Length: 229
Image (cartoon, rainbow, N blue to C red):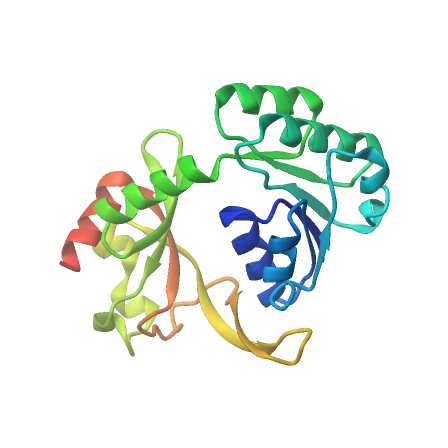
């Protein structure tokens, strides 16, 4: 896929580097030449330009990208203007960062495909990781349920899924397993790419470090987490 990441601050630069490592084509854009120079070796391509300038924005391959991400942080005006220019240019999908509720309301009014508040989302994920040991990510579902990424501890290594029987033992429904697979990047460098195993069978052999997606109640997930302590 092709991404344009606008704003190479703490959030934007990490996002751009991660997408590049995953083998995607990423153009990192920032008004600071220092930042574009800093990340030019770890992002597919970096460009220094003023994204609030419509003429400058037209030099970017906006219609060819799959996603344009506005990762600008504290500069409210630049974020809104950039988002508006992307919308005007007819970009396929726009993702924009919001720093507060007012910012989110404004960019939603412009019309974007996804609004993100990374600080808020990171805080929620951290809270879940602190409360639920072994849980990497958590996705709440209405009525007290959630889907979680559970990192399997060593006690499950070598066991088949049917031997553990998560439904009967823990009241949790396994969905799939995510394992890292080594692939080559665009620059022929080895990288670890997460890959889902698909639908699970009872004969699936578990390995420590596997990420098992589970669905269940908050209580059942908390009980599983406590069993690992």
